[in-house]
Length: 308
Ligand code: CP
Ligand code: NVA
Image: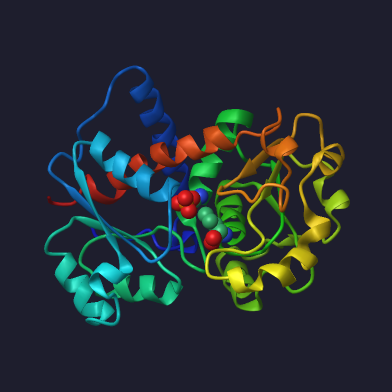
């Protein structure tokens, strides 16, 4: 069966649960020296229009640990959408690789690839979502705090790709999601509509006051104020987000056992201070490490029952 991993809104709650369980199992197996070679001889293609450390390297390491190999391309290497159409690219690359991870500016490129490709397409970050990140983060939450069900995740910052995927993952896994963003940086109506259609009856909690938002939080999460492609808005955004910095004073308003997460890369002293990022509540390195284990589970889920 051909599966894609483009948007968490298309994932079932059962599959979300299964992917988290498998990530944790694969991490345990690895720690006890067991590396199943389930994807021996398989090739993962990666095509990235934006920079990446964690996503690229964790995908390349994940397929290698499962016995396969990776081929990395920059968008400009192949002229995606310029040298030939996205559709032709998808049809051709599917003759060489077994799955393709894609990082793009426009989410519509990923949708076009998924519509044309006969291999699984993985969203490795778009302007709309970052599903691999959000799922790996819920693996981390489960490791640190047990089942996500009923936990309160407060996202302080931009209602962008990472926040959107975290809100969907929260709904899939039974967590409470609170968005704490300034006016103009909340979820767009189109996304809210899709969320409401997928999870009828669930409301998106929005609390614009950071101090009120973090009260009772189990998890406090933030991301950069200007994402890749928004650098030209950095000055305006710094002004709008200044009251939303996650610092020790804000953390002091949360429960004493609340954990801090950040997808990284971080802009220290902007959205988060070094005191918080490097402090005892922060688990950002475990979070980054778990990208690898989730990626392994995802590749197995997408490829293991597909003919090689
Ligand atoms: N968190 C994350 O996706 O990092 P990279 O941009 O380095 O891949
Ligand atoms: N929101 C950030 C996430 C980076 C992992 C960006 O899109 O640049």
